[in-house]
Every structure is written in structure tokens, then in C-alpha cells.
Image 1 (cartoon, rainbow, N blue to C red):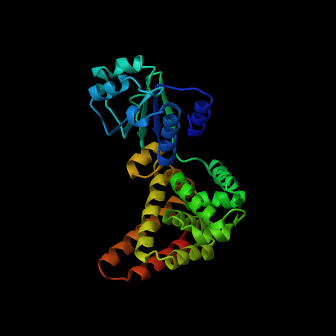
Image 2: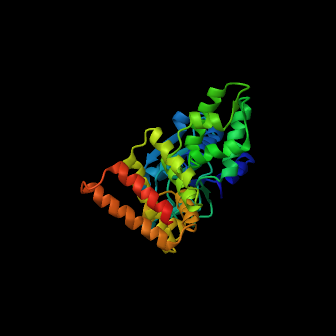
Image 3: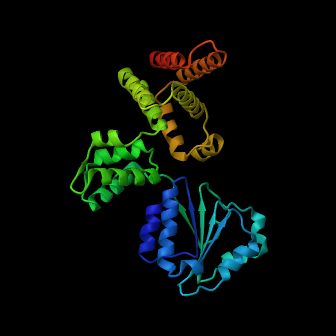
Amino acid sequence: MKYIEFKNQFQDGQSFPVYIFEGEDAFFRQRGLELIKKRYLSEPELNLTNFDGEPSVSDLIASLNGYPFMSEKRVTVVKEFYPKQNYFKSGLKDYLDAPSNTAILVILNQNKSDAFKKFDKVCVVDCSKADASILSRWVKGECTRNNVTIDSQTARLLSEYCLSDMTRIEKETEKLVSYAGSGGVIDKNVLDQMVVRDVEYQIYNMTEYIAKKKVDLALAVVTDMLSKGEPAQKILVSVYNYFRRLLLVAISDKTVDEYVTLLGIKDFAVRKAKEQAKMFTKRSLKRAVDMLTDFDYKIKSGLIDVSDAMWLSLFKIMIES
């Protein structure tokens, strides 16, 4: 289930003995844990056990079978836990088939793990990045709570600037609310003044303009990045890596999860790449990657300045795409 479904069901009183919060957004993983702790732990110091990585089976079961003291339940938290099947042969399977009614096991994983999912009493919560509408509603809600006005379009733009990373959205919203003050207004001008846009968002934005033949806007994005202190080399490397990604997703039929593993990126980034790859021909993407590879060789060979290579490569991509 999605995080919002978990939250609603949990607040309605539904509970499981085992929760797996998995996905790239650490904000949702941590918030899920905090909801569980708030409900069940009156004395966290006495009833909360934390493990990083794979604990021994005996230590894990001992924690789960411990009796709560001055709290409704004991909570055992394991972070980045990806056990193999043989891990379940030493008593853990028996426990999961009949878990204690005074214990909650919480697993916080950035990546997916199927090992626990065959057990009926395990609740898997999808903590991947939320869509823009949910994020913009959250931003508006936080602003309203602090007597600050922000419209839906600006709230949505904030989530885009932060690449839908809820942890960063929370921090930026807090900063904007503090800047605006009670009774204040957050508009696009305030947003552009106060929020540093993620480099990957800028590259994504620039690529979108190139695909739509809006060269002036694409150049404006690059100029803005340079004015904010981004070095030409970093921009060029980011463009190179991004177009390689677009070419890969254009010529391959792998699933989003397979790309996440292969490229070492978040599923949000994969989905965005698949959307943009459709805006180019495979030939134009191959041509762009070949050209960027050639410029990379010339830079390393001392045949061209990095800044010149960046501008020349971008102009060629804009003209030939």
C-alpha cells in the first residue's frame, strides 16, 4: 500500500505486527516509524530496540519476545534489512507465522526486499516519492497552518525544484514559511529567490526545452546555473550522464525496478527519463551521446577548454535534436 493509505488505516486503528517501509523517500519511512512509536511507546528508552543491518536471528527474536514495560508494545526497528531465505530457518519463520501481540517489528529499507512478503501478517508500505498533487497539497497545508498564503502552482513548483524529495520539501517549506512570516505570501519570485533548484532538475528542465525547440529558454537555464555558481564541468558532466540515461531507456525495454538497480538511481528519476526519452529519436540521442563522449576525450587531452566544450556541445544538441 502507499504511505497515505497506511497512514489513514493506522489512524483508523488498524495495526500489523510487522511493517516494512520501503522506498526512496526517507521522509515517509521515518514518519511511518514515528506514528508507530507515538501510538505504542510511552517509555521509548525501555521498549525500543534498534538494529542497523542484519541482526542475528537470536537477537532479533529475543527483542521481539521481550515483554513491554510501561508501554502497550515493544518496538524493534531494523534498518536496511535484506535477509536471504535461509535466515528464516532458525525460528524466525515460526515467529512470523504466530507473532507476539505485544511486539511490533519495523523494517526501514531504501530498496525492495521480497523475503518477508510471503507472510500474511506483514504490511508493506510503499515509500517511493509521492506524486506532485499530494506534495503540493502538503506544502499548502503547512503554509495554511502557519498563516502563510501559497497557490497550488507555486506549491507544485517547489516540489519540482526539490525533485519530489519530501525531506528537502519539508526543509524548504519551513524556510519559506519563516521568511514570509505570519500573514505573508509565497509566490514564484520568493521561490526563485529562496530555493536553490536541484542540478538534476535544472538539467531535466533544460532537456525539456531542447526537445520542444525552445532554445532561448534552454540557454536561460544554463546561464542561471552558471550565475548560481555551478561550474561548467559539472554542468557538462551532468548533461553527458543524463543523455546517456535517456539513450539507455530509449533502446532498452527493462522495467523501472531493473533500471533502478542497473543505474543506481531512484525510480522517480527513471520515470522522468522514460518520459523525456520519448521526446527524442533514438538516433538523435545516440548522436548527442557520441558527441559528448568526443568532447570528454578532447577535454581530457587538453584539446579544448571545459567552458567552450560545454557551450559547443549544448549548441550542437539544440541544433541537431
